[in-house]
Image (cartoon, rainbow, N blue to C red; front, side, top):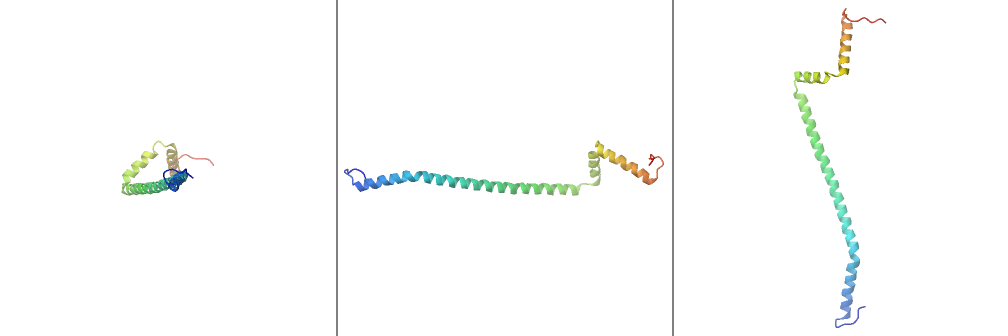
Length: 118
């Protein structure tokens, strides 16, 4: 208890105890505030991730819709030209085309086709 002075000792003691209580509660209150801020930050980051995924899905859907629309509006000549550009210079595609020609000549009975002995 505080020493007796010209002020009432009960008032001095009450103020002192209040100051001690405030200083004692400060660490707990600051940690509680820190935990609340961390929880809010984590919640906001999760909300942002969900919103970004939803925006990405919307963009992906728009891209797929545009690509399908483009595929349906292509004419046959453009398709043939694009296919020819993809297949030209491709050794696998050229080998397959030559084999297809050889097999077609056997089927047609072409006399110029190479003969294989079996």
